[in-house]
Length: 76
Image (cartoon, rainbow, N blue to C red):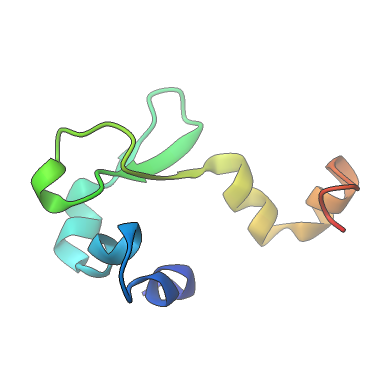
């Protein structure tokens, strides 16, 4: 399990992501490719915008040097 998800599973909106079946089955890529997401719960499979991560935000987590370069004020 990803550390970010493991940390958040003690309650709240990301708890559903701890379920491996839901994680795999509910996963979707935004049609424009700008985000990755899931419905907020398995029961809300048709819900739009439950849990999402922006592609750019994920990139900057993996490449913090790019965040410092592209957005110096945000990197402080």
